[in-house]
Image 1: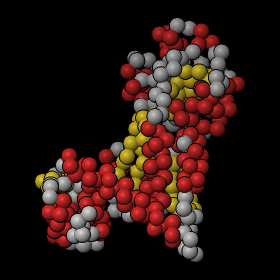
Image 2: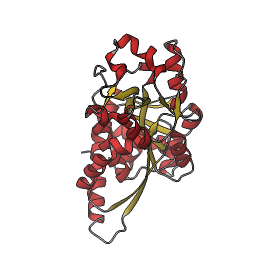
Image 3: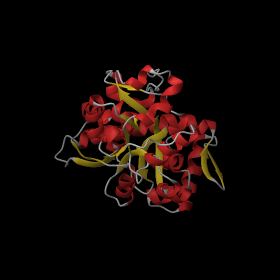
Image 4: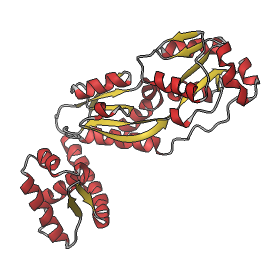
Amino acid sequence: MDRRLKFRHIQCFLEAARSHHLTEVARTLNVTQAAVSKTLTELETIMGMQLIVRDRSGLSLTPRGEVFYHYAAAGMESFEKGYEGLVGLSDAPSIELRIGVLPTVAARFMPQAMNTFFAQATQPVNFALQTGYNRHLFDLLHGGKIDLAIARIGVPEMMHELDFIHLYAEPIVLVARAGHPILALPTASRMRAVKDYPFLLAPKDTRIRPIIEQSFATLNIPLPGTLIETVSNTFGRSYLPKSDGLWMISYGVVGDLIESGVLALVAEPLDSTREPVGLVRRLDQEMPVAMRQLMSILLAQTRDLRPLTDSPG
């Protein structure tokens, strides 16, 4: 390896690849933009090739830059793990990572993610884990009360100065208890029969309510007249198996009950109800190794997530 290649060259290159803007790289590294440009130019001179394209839209990697990023990022992660492993042997204090997650994520993904994280951890890490609905999680993130949110993508004004990494798309599903009378009807006729049963529905101030209303409007079907408006997943999961009620809710809330046969899909979810769920963090914050490890675990956990394609009934 060329002896001119220094740690600062790799660090600057990785931040440029992640941030895409000189100003953000300079702020993260606490140096001037001119210093960032000089360091990147030195790196390309040492490598003998162009790694980064600079234009009005910011910074982007060339094909060779993409290859170099893959190996440089892996090498940096190994270095950081080795360093933190040694630090962990001392009396260094444990790390606290503050995570906010949707209730569906808390039940469906976080237990396995926590087990995997602790199996791989090289030093103590304390997690402060709390659940909440989308708007609340974004408020906590913007207010600096949590370090990472696992939430649905927000409206543009909510996403200001935030980074979103997609994990999966979660549909809103219409479910009933196994053996419900509506399941005996032809699939094409079921939505018209929804009005004949009590209907559990999220209140108007929730994110999924307009999505549900729009899905009924798309089918030219009015909302049922007998409504139970609630945000209580606990109530819905307990009430539905014991009643003829119907429930339109995010798949993650009832996925285990569908897979176990307690509940059944009344109709295939509409594509328009599938909402992106992902990892959300502030662009102005540093990303500690513990956060990167957890994000990597969640990305791997959801990469091969089986799409919801089971036939209803």
